[in-house]
Length: 100
Image (cartoon, rainbow, N blue to C red):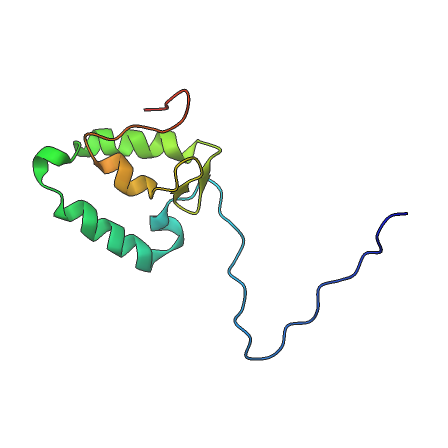
């Protein structure tokens, strides 16, 4: 016997509204501007020798946006903010077959 379908209860007024749907293949800069500002400040605070050139940064982000593991600006494999990871010289993609 299959369980009976029961709809979700109607939200109670003043209850915190649930967040929107997950955005697959979106970066923080496209989804959460407040959090992105914090990550951007972190990237800007890195010394030049710890940051990759802008062209390489954009190339890495392009690879991340085409990855099925990107969810709301986070890597589903390691949990990092991809925009922060892509900016650092010593970082690499955590996938078994790295994209960059």
